[in-house]
Length: 156
Image 1 (tube, rainbow, N blue to C red):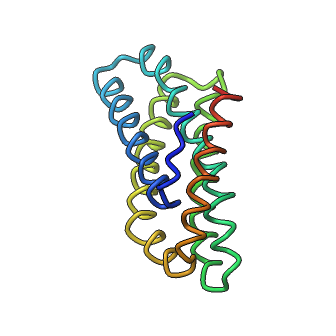
Image 2: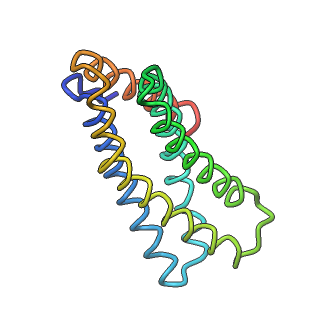
């Protein structure tokens, strides 16, 4: 298990965001090349990454930020976006979704992931950094990484 105890919660999250961007790029390329089966075979990698990330991020960033009055609306918005992605992922994992709908939903998910990551890094993180002291940021970074790893190990 690779836990970088030097990483703050924001550094740990950004490192996972970079992985998510690479997975989205690979999946998008498969879709654009009309490689439906390869897309469906590759998708579970993105699925487990997003689920592990969202679970650990909500617990180790959103909840601590929500403990501050100024963090309530910030966290609610981000959690709402996670919920939208969860619904798309449920459609993709359904097994009864038509190929056409699967492709449209997958493209929508990729778009939403990219939007969410950009918004989080450019707005949410900046605001959240003002609410969490350095020691808390360090502690949450390690907790996030451990939980992400455990989720992947148990669900991957």
